[in-house]
Length: 393
Picture 1: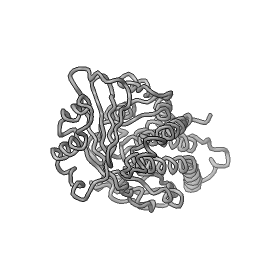
Picture 2 (picture 1 turned 90 degrees about the horizontal axis):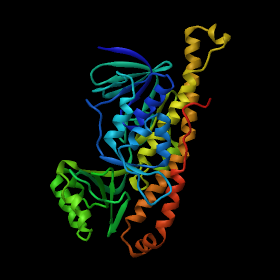
Picture 3 (picture 1 turned 30 degrees about the vertical axis):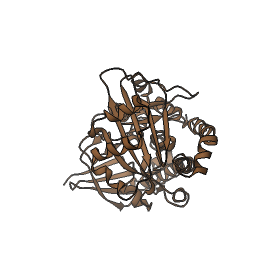
Picture 4 (picture 1 turned 120 degrees about the horizontal axis):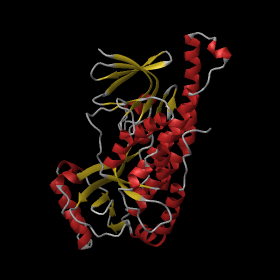
């Protein structure tokens, strides 16, 4: 049975986990990332990256890598691009030192051990760590350990797809959106040949089973979008079945983040483990990148604190206790900095989705006549955020 000791362990090699690890690496702090699968997970195809996230990517040193592969969307005063999830995750991972990510490492239990945590893996390995960060998604074992509930079902589901042509798609670099009775559909170009699309709706019990059958899923979407312009409809018609993905849209109740634990002792969460949200503002991945920068900055302050003469005279146990206290304060600082922004975005995204997908005449009237400028203002305000640099010095 393997046993090892680490300063910082991050559970989950998704956007938040890799961003946090890369931020720490830029500060000269080593971390270990545990990923349950045997390779990087890139499900989801693509995501919107807004100005706030580009600021975080630039701080992490990979913004220029991603810009050269993705079109900037027109129609706004902010930088927005539809980014391949695979390219984003790979760009983050490729900047990390070899051995940072440990694959096939499923966490099955977390145990207290003095000023540290013992992480038990499915293969019998036990890892002792000073800091534990949960970036393990909506079904986070770390969030459960903190006492947070499972992410709630929003009542809506989403089907996403992506197609790469062997020629130019000839689309303008802009976000195209369509509404119907109880559904919302969008089409976005990623680059000159790749198009990402999504479809959200409120499913019946029978329709919830669509994710089990991609062929039925595709037929369902095309029937709902029968009045969609034929050139755009063709992208969905020509999308391979293995490039269809369906999932329920989940979110964390805002009051959980008001009264619940984002952090506890030397443990915290980030990304979807912290603030799962509906995709209606396109901010889920953006907030995960912000988390990574802020969390790396807070922990960097701990692991670079210079000991004064009095501390150097203390024994190992006293020094361990002093560092434990600094870690607790740094994670509390991170939680305080991220809590209310996450609450506001979760609530706004949820409300925006309900209105945009509304079926009543009153809701449809409000959406068509008033929501567009209101939503544009909200998006601009949300995307104007700056998570700051990696170091306060």
